[in-house]
Structure formats: C-alpha cells, structure tokens
Amino acid sequence: MSRYGKTQILINDNEYYRSLVRKRGVNAIKQYATPVLKNPTIEERSQLAKTTHIWKYGDRFYKLSNQYYGDPQYWWIIAWYNSTPTEANISTGTAIRIPLNIEEVLAVLGA
Image (tube, rainbow, N blue to C red; front, side, top):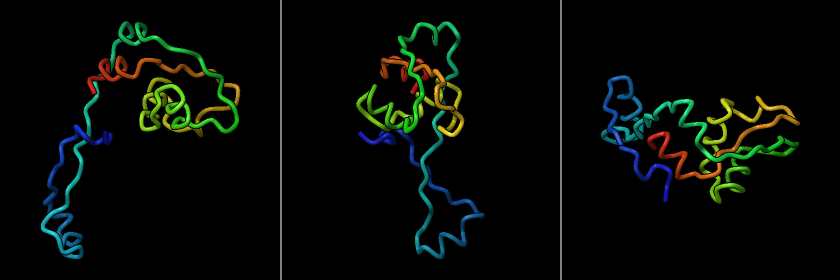
C-alpha cells in the first residue's frame, strides 16, 4: 500500500499558483494534505518495545526501517523516535533507539 493511501487529496486553486496552473494546462494543482500526528506522552513512548542500535558507517534510516519493519517507507519513525531529522545529525558510534512494533508506533501517533 502506498504511504499516501489514507491521505486526503486537496485541490489547490490558490491565486499564488494560477500562473503555474496555466503553464501546465490544468484546472488546479492536486496536493496531499499534511498528516496531523499526535504527540505521544512519555508513558506511551515508554510502553513501546524497542531495541538499541549502534550507528555505524553506511547506516541509513530507510535501511534500518527495511531491516526492522520490512519496509523502508517507515524510516521517519526511527528519525522521529530519536528526534533526529536526518542521518547527518548522527555520528558513528551513537546509540539510537528503534521501536520494534510498527503497528503499535503508528497507533500511538494516531497515524
């Protein structure tokens, strides 16, 4: 399933985009709505089963997501859980936490 499967599609007919709409020869621009995620409590986060991973050269969030969840599209879960938006913010040897059950994580986030 696409990661956008449950995301609402919006029609952007904002005046700012009118020149772009004319250039493309379309009536309006379709965009995906920004998902609203719940900010879990400390208690909710602490109840998630997790493991520690020592960051090594060549690690990427999408690779770890594929390794732990069987799907690279959930890379953002690992980034979110560690409050680290990109791999550039992690040094080799840093211990990161990886929540193990993707369904539980998504439920806690309201996704």
